[in-house]
Image (cartoon, rainbow, N blue to C red):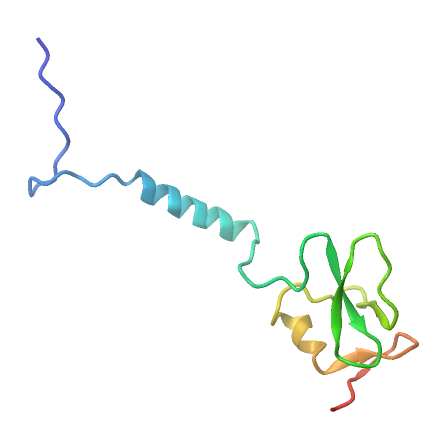
Length: 109
């Protein structure tokens, strides 16, 4: 007859805690970090893109597949903010574009 299986114990005689959940959480954290995901607030939601108010620092979000609303334009290529407080979000707080699409310092006010 076989001896019954006993739970593994540590040298102190206590039962060892299961480390599988801890390892799963650690693995998920590493994967999340490596994929480039961010926990920062996105400028726009899914299915939208950010647009800049012409002549001021105002911004909005437009639906993918639609042109920006009147008085707004797309951000210049490579200078589109993605998350609140990122490099381009900060930059566009003091800059804007004029009616010709030229980047200018935003008027104070």
